[in-house]
Image 1 (cartoon, helix red, strand yellow):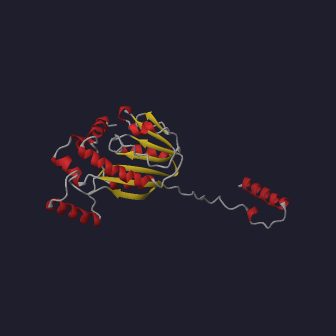
Image 2 (tube, helix red, strand yellow):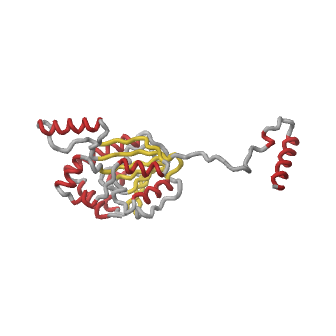
Image 3 (cartoon, helix red, strand yellow):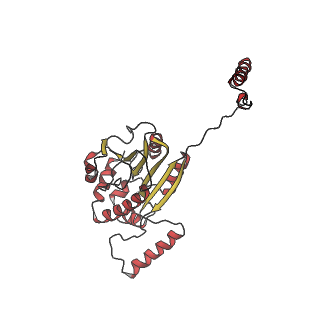
Length: 266
């Protein structure tokens, strides 16, 4: 796990530009969790001081992070939110115990993101939901800080596109339900009255309408798909007693016993 990136990201979110991006991300998460229900909500990793699980209707919440000095003060005020210190590569959650799992930039921290997703898949109940947020590598604001300003925060991050994350989830058997992006603006916290800035933002919105996303942060919501198994094979067939007309318990019992004797001779 890249604890250096997590520490730098937490500090960056306390700056002016970081707070603006954090507010955009919080809005995406709040919209995603408002219609998700269950008994246990698990958040893996803390990237900012925002309490992202606050708007969830799920009562019991677990916040797991290896560095508890970065926990949200709002989370401490929630009596139903429990803080757990644990390495994200070795999660202390049993199989099929969580109803919703939130990963705020957690895949950008993990040494092996796909392995972490497999752990999340194991802890989710059937038809549970996973929520993933991350920086869009092609986001205009992100590219400015990553390539032009050489911001150390984004140089440490292992950024993946939302399309790549979707492919991983589909391989694991998930249905993508929501894919949303934050503002497409390149100039967070700057006045947009200038003609040049307005023109750039208008151009970005046009590209977004064509499917070319330049939002700073993306949010994915996926549902764990459970397929009903179908019994196959030449030796499998419907029991004969199911097709026998109702003649009392004795007739059905005799037919079932005969079926068992025939099977034992094979």
